[in-house]
Length: 282
Ligand SMILES: [Zn+2]
Image (cartoon, rainbow, N blue to C red; front, top):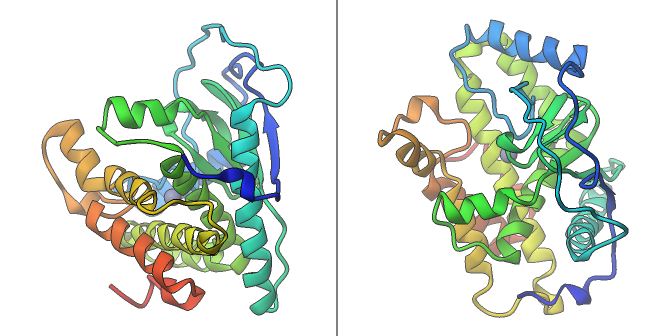
């Protein structure tokens, strides 16, 4: 367990876990249009990188939440601390780029909740909505990662994933997302490849964050391997193999296990934004 108490910063976390799942029908028009646009541009050939662009409406379960979250619990403090330390880093990086940084919001929810990109559901996994600059996280996802995908899990693994999502926000603040979306619109055939590059860059950004807290003694030796294990577990090849026993790189949207670990490690070891230029390397 990392020593999160060494980080005093806090991010903007909204806890919706005590609310029931969002009711179907609340899909935002913008979200639907964006989904249709990407589908149209790519003839439906591309798997939309769900964790950053769009949440697809799925059948909602109307089950009741059994746990009631009243006030701030340990998880909210943890998520807020990870977010806060990411924000500290990005404020400085953006300042060096002569840009301002507006911190994202993080919404904790269970099962389903409204987002600026439509209905955010647990099935999608943690994701970032570019339209409302918010990260959506049902932390029970991490149990699934351990139970179904064989990840080792742990708080550092969870922090890696949260930081990856903050990385998507940073891409948006840096203007990278807009440029990539435009390229995707110009040539739908490149959409999967561009998506992989965006994802690997977010992994590298997550590595930058791990580097930024390295010297204040939050992580004890060896804990960084938790993050690398999580990066490998969410590789497209690993997930495809688990899902249907076959690996098809054509459909990748996030990159292989090896690529994800490579880029996380690159960010972690270099600590420099320029090392995360996935669009010109690899
Ligand atoms: Zn991502």
